[in-house]
Image (cartoon, rainbow, N blue to C red):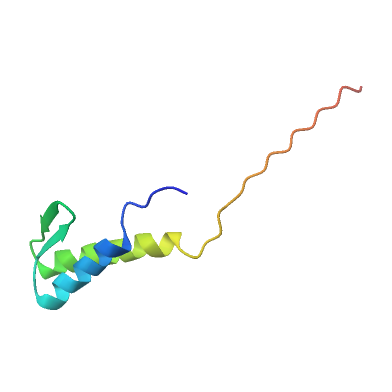
Length: 72
């Protein structure tokens, strides 16, 4: 399984900042300041879409069958 670019913890931090009316959000050792509430909402929507796109889907397995025949 590949690593997601976003985590549920980041999404929760953004939602908490929105609820408090803050535009600064810290993720571990990083501090991000959004210019507006609209920009913060766009970030929340982007993370929700990314997380929704990877959850609940079974892992796709690809199979390749190779057969050869030497007859004429």
